[in-house]
Image (cartoon, rainbow, N blue to C red; front, top):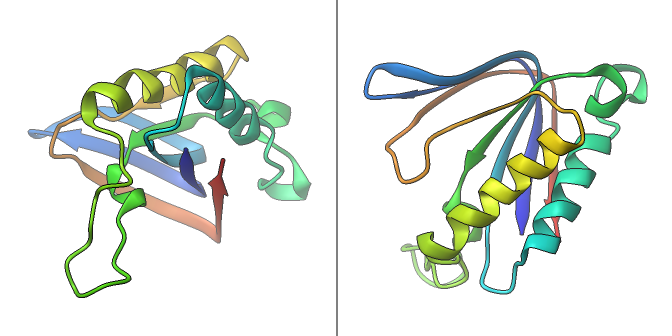
Length: 140
């Protein structure tokens, strides 16, 4: 599992003109799933995201109750080392990825986090205003 975590002043996801998820002063988390990921991997990712000390004064979302916007992002496993067209073979198929992204969201909520989401398999317009900018890649 791979996640890109960004500190944001605000972030939102719009699908077909409707805002389906939005936060202010929190974390935007793009999550990609690969073939070997499990529910345990999802729980570990949720813990890492929630406790990541990336916010002001080296605090985490767990420390500050900062909201988290989770967006599924299979393209995090795109491989463009050969040629100009990325290969997506490392990305898990949607049937595998969707429940694992949901497992990340559920694990974050079980930890007490306020979580908003995008919409799986939708054409999403993701907007964000980064703070810092601070961007961390988590690779499990």
